Image (cartoon, rainbow, N blue to C red; front, side):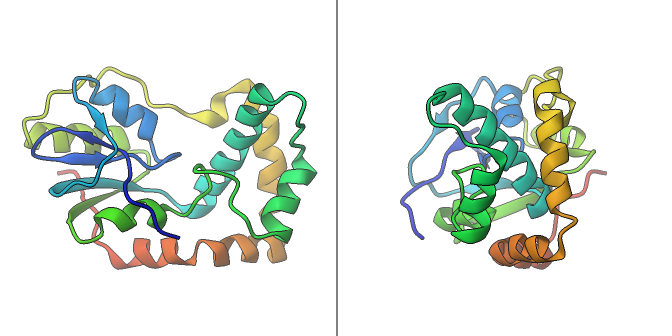
Length: 190
């Protein structure tokens, strides 16, 4: 699984890699004054990593919502998505693709890793401040679980994680992501 590029916000001294379901929309809003690029690039990168199980849950719900809106004739039910993922072992789209996939094109660059948690907004603001990057700190961070349309879907998929076989399947498909998370040092706000 290789590709030539990934999207990033180019702030000059730092580039913020945009990984779907890893606060990429928030990052673009925070750094609205900078261009989003999708070419090979050298430099210093900021990469936000997220717990793979949380990301899978959020990405799967996003897939169902997006595809229902785009393809009303092609119904992606809960059962159909489970078949695609658990029986075929296929990733649904970029929202469920392993995070390591997006990092491959910049793996040889200097990377500052940030873990997506309750301090994410403050962490990104601190990084921007330390690097003299202008930002829009008042923009709200997205929280999909608070969306009424998504709540029921989240509950259905959270129930899947109670099945040891299915949870094990998810963990194995994201093994590279867990290895990455366990092998890097994360930026900590002061």
